[in-house]
Length: 174
Image 1 (cartoon, helix red, strand yellow):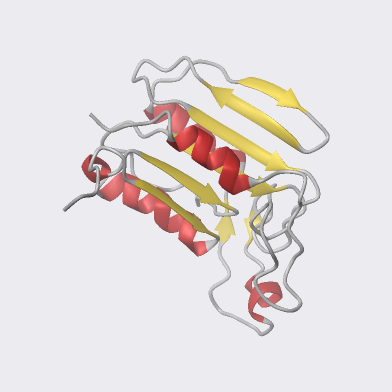
Image 2 (cartoon, helix red, strand yellow):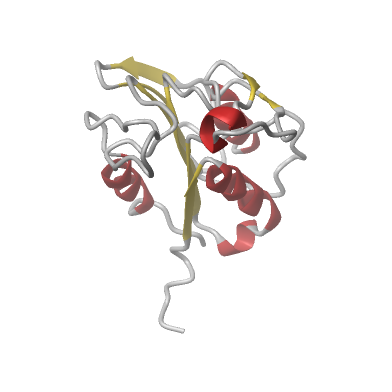
């Protein structure tokens, strides 16, 4: 095919974000980087087989995937009861999972009115990790549109797509 196999990027929102983490663990030889949006890890994931650059975006006011961890609130998302409620780890655990597997040192944290950002750039593997906790953003793609009536309104102060693409352009799988 004509696709550049060294530049395959995986992103997804909510369950799609969780899928990005899983694909990075299961087929890392096919992926250059991941960018989960308002996703989560549970804290019991197996070790990664190889380092993976990661760009992670969460909503500071997410009522479905709580940024401080705890029970997924699928009823808020689906509008009905669900037996699939599971506890998730705090949102930062997504970043620390990859930072640990990527051999990263301590993060540099910055705060702006639009987001709190932690960046792990000193990684022995060369695979950086960036974590954005977007202010005023619930269970939505920051910079996007609400997915349906009644869905969370995304913050327009942070454009996840533009920020993610800037990160993607710096990453290539060897």
